[in-house]
Amino acid sequence: MKVRNSLRSLKNRHRDCRIVRRKGRVYVINKTQRKFKARQG
Image 1: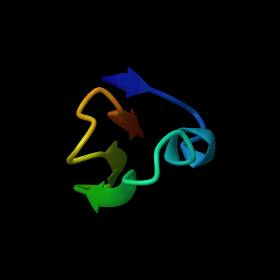
Image 2 (image 1 turned 30 degrees about the vertical axis):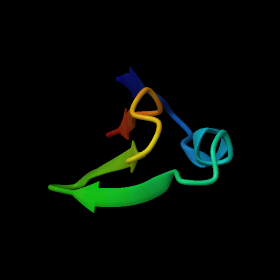
Image 3 (image 1 turned 90 degrees about the horizontal axis):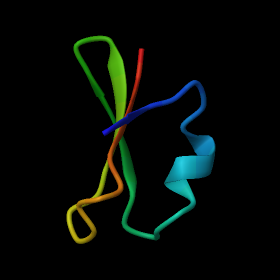
């Protein structure tokens, strides 16, 4: 999992990427391509 300052570019890498907020952190998750994971905060 990558920790990034900006998640906007990561969201555009695949069309199934979703931005999710959990416990004050922002995550990019992807159900189909599981390698596209990232965290912010």
